[in-house]
Image (cartoon, rainbow, N blue to C red; front, side, top):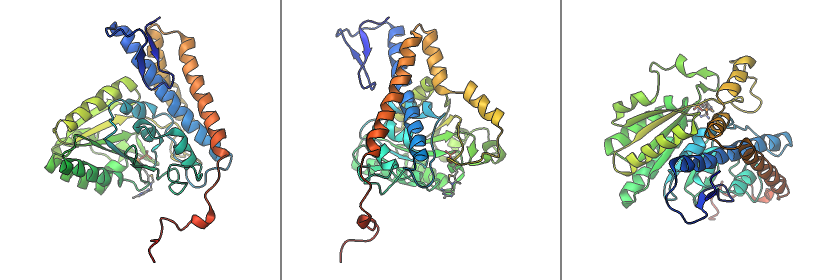
Length: 346
Ligand SMILES: Cc1ncc(C[n+]2csc(CCOP(=O)(O)OP(=O)(O)O)c2C)c(N)n1
């Protein structure tokens, strides 16, 4: 249908095969949509692979997947630059992939392999990648002061980089959220606080503990800019995230970008989810699936269903192959267990 444009093989970008610069808008939109669909498909396949790794006993401890929240991760990918920093939470896989963390090294880390991003020391909640400027913490709210530190350092060094601190709605009620924004607002630091609002902090509903309808509307209290977006719509997230990054990068001060979304699975794998019914979960999957929404939009724009199905199945196949490969990797040497815990200086 769009003969001069094709997805690049890794799905990360779009190449102009004929060297033509001008494109009809519809074709450009479709090409962008395909990239976003592939990103989301890759993210979901990644987390489904983590579930499989857990079933096979390759992951010990809690696992928090982001299935249902792909539009937030995929939407943020486009506006991030290599020099930017992202500090994420316990539910971090999609943000890591968005920042460009190598998927295989991340999966190996989650599967506690010596070949992992941190040699298997960090595990699923604490991946750290200085090469791409990505890190995460399992301590709720604690991602934000770390991101603030990055933003402060960027300012001191005169770098035009932005720090993104990710939090859930639960973390947005922590003291660290307020403390971070007080300083970021007062100093107009280049910080974007991404609130991934899936409506639940484990079992606590957002509206039961929040006097305002959104987190974003509280932004003026800190001299920040607030943006609220439908976090199941990848195009809307991409647009809002680009605006937020541009604002912070241009010296406009901190932004609270809130994306309302839904997590389809329990808080962690094994969560009995006594706080919501099976019908409620079913409804979310049927009506608020960001991948289905994006796919339907592309189909309505004239893209062939077979093309869209191929993207989804290719990403599943790729992720399965990656897991098989990772599980053949060695586990860390037990004699190394105390490395990075105690100083090696006598
Ligand atoms: C300081 C701290 N308190 C409590 C916990 C336990 N805990 C882990 S996740 C979580 C809820 C987080 O909810 P939210 O921020 O909305 O993120 P979501 O899990 O919905 O992505 C809590 C209370 C923790 N990890 N750290």
